[in-house]
Each structure stands twice: as structure tokens, then as C-alpha cells.
Image 1 (spheres, rainbow, N blue to C red):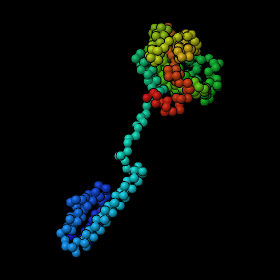
Image 2: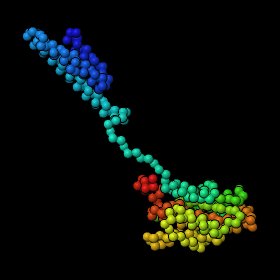
Image 3: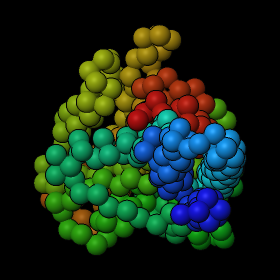
Image 4: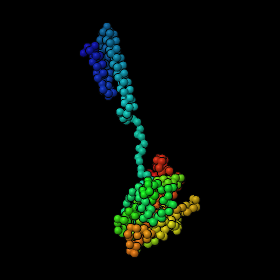
Length: 327
Ligand code: DAH
């Protein structure tokens, strides 16, 4: 091959390269130890003095052109590669991997699940009810008197004179007892709403309601259940106190407190009691045959007590620093 056509071919081959890999192959083919240019350089020795000078000038010129051309082509590839990486069209495999940010269940969901797992072992089934509720289910049928302060505009979000955002999951007790005959064992998790907002109260929060109706359900059943649930939830580290209280839908009624070692105070954790005979009458359950007990737990409240969280708004801010603690 004459030297002139040879350089044209080499430059064409370089130009046709589609990657640095292909370019390296061309480089070895022409500039490598067994490559074409190297072979030509070896030939110089065999030429006579006149030809030698002429030929070596030529071959060195070719070598320089090829080296230069390969250098610029490579530079172009690298620049293009960086551009693609920047535009995220190509993966830069040399980068170290990023930290994986997996999501997790919110602590409210985790807690509802934990409570469910305790009571479902006692045979409770999970039921849900509407958040937009008629006053009959939220108040009347639960024996809440017409003049009870909780009905008033300051506490309840009313839509009109009949409908409201439920203030308690107790409303679902009535809906279930209207439809089902005892034995009834239910657990009702859900959102409730009250016009109240400060460090420990939020206009929306979560409750879980329990209702057990059967023959011979008594006060000791209720106490046993509440005590064992709290020992399970707070992991045996607590002192429990039952305190006489008032709820319109239960009699007798109790509030259950746990002792906070740090503040040396008793703190209320839940309300419970024996279902009021008036409530049973409203749903046509025969009080000579059946009795029942019920309880209501504020989910955010027990989480705040367990993990010493002071501001209820932390639950709704989606601050990863709080959420990550419960992964
Ligand atoms: N509904 C009550 C509240 O929102 C909680 C409650 C107390 C529910 C006693 C009950 C109960 O079922 O027996 O404060």
C-alpha cells in the first residue's frame, strides 16, 4: 500500500469509530508493536541513505497525524460521555451507590396494628364506620344528653343540624349492634374530629374502640382485658390504676391511668365501662340476657406517653427525623 492512501484509510477508520473501545483497537492496529506504522519504522534500516531520510520524515509525519487524530477523537468521546451522564441519559458506573431511602409504616398505623393483634387474639373482628356521621349515632343512641357540652359548637364540627364529623368511634358500636345479634366482639379503628388544638390535642386524631357483648360479660372481664392490654402495649414496665369516671354510654365507667416515673404523675390512657342499659335498649338488645363492655383508646395519646413525645403535631408533620425512629 502506498503511504498516501494508507494515511487516508487510517484517518477514515478513526473517523468511523463509535466508541473508545473501537478507537483503542484502531490504535493498536496502527501504532501497536505489531502495528502497521511500527513495521514501516523498522523498514527504515533497510533503506539506502537517500531513501531513508525521505521515508523517515514521511512516516513520522503519518505517525504524528494518527496520534493526534486519535487523541482528539478520544477527547470528544469523553466530553460526550460526561454530557450524557449529566443529562442522566447514561449511568455512570464509576459512581459510588447512593443510600437507599426505604419508606416505613407511620407509627400510628404500626400502633393500630399492634392493638389489633392483641384484641384479635381475643376474637375481635375489625370494623369501620363513616367519618361523616348522623347525630343519632354519635350522640343520641349513645345516651349523650341533648345539653351535653360535647355536642356544642366549640367541640363538634357540624355540617348542619343533623350531620357532623364524628367525635368518637363509639358511634360504630350503635351501627354494629343495630345490625348484628350478640355475641359481638369488635374493634373499630379510625379518625375522629374535635374542634380542639394545642400541644396535646389536634382537630383530627385516631381512636380505637372496642365492644364485647355476650351472655355473662362482667366488670372483671373488662378489667382483665384493659390491664393485660396495657402491660402488653407498654411492655410490662408500668403501674396501672383504675379510676371511677363518667361516660354517658357506660355504667359503671372507668378511666385507666398509668404512672409516669419521670414526672411522678398518673396519666389517663383510656376510658371504658359496662355498656349502659339505655344504649342496649336503643338497639333492641335484651338486657336480661346480655351484658357488654366497651373501651376507647386515643392512639396518638398512648404513643405520646410511650415514647415521651410532647407535641401531637409531630405525627402530622412528616418530619423524617421522627418517622425514622419507628422504622
Ligand atoms: N368515646 C370516648 C371518648 O371519645 C372514649 C370511650 C370511653 C369509649 C369509654 C368507650 C368507653 O367505649 O366505654 O372519649
